[in-house]
Length: 234
Image 1 (cartoon, one colour):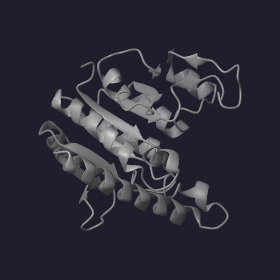
Image 2 (tube, helix red, strand yellow):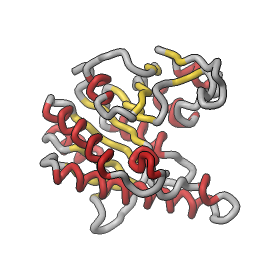
Image 3 (cartoon, helix red, strand yellow):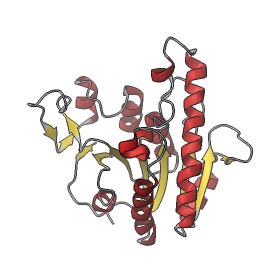
């Protein structure tokens, strides 16, 4: 494997697949089965899941819910997703732990870097819930933060699009996909990889980000094996 320890970021919308909201458990099982294969190959996997299949923070609450409350609702949505995905892992025989950035008794244990690394080294998949625990920060930023803390070799950014493009390929037929791109160029061109806070944090900590499509969950294994797939941001 190209990477020994990774942080996999999955959008909440990806869990819903074609349903758009809630869960498509057939697809979730495929993703979890793929991660199971990676763990069996010796890869340590931490996962951050967004909450967009239920609530996207300020994007859903703008004009109706105060920003801090809207973001906290988004944190709770990610905790729900962590519980669902962790349970699928357990049904597949994969030990999974849910760690949350805020105290939610009975949902998961409070995030602790040393404990998270211990779980990873013992073969657990670790689900990181509730973002950073603070409003105004996205789950992209949470993913980079956790990756830096656990000293991940790379961030695998599994999206509904197969890489980083010069423009939105759904709106601009002339958009070109990059095979490789620097953090500086992503920031300078305002490309929609992650938000600027997350991108800057990845750059400051020199963590490569691989952006690829999750439509085929086996792409996770291909990236881990070092296959040239999607876009590498470094």
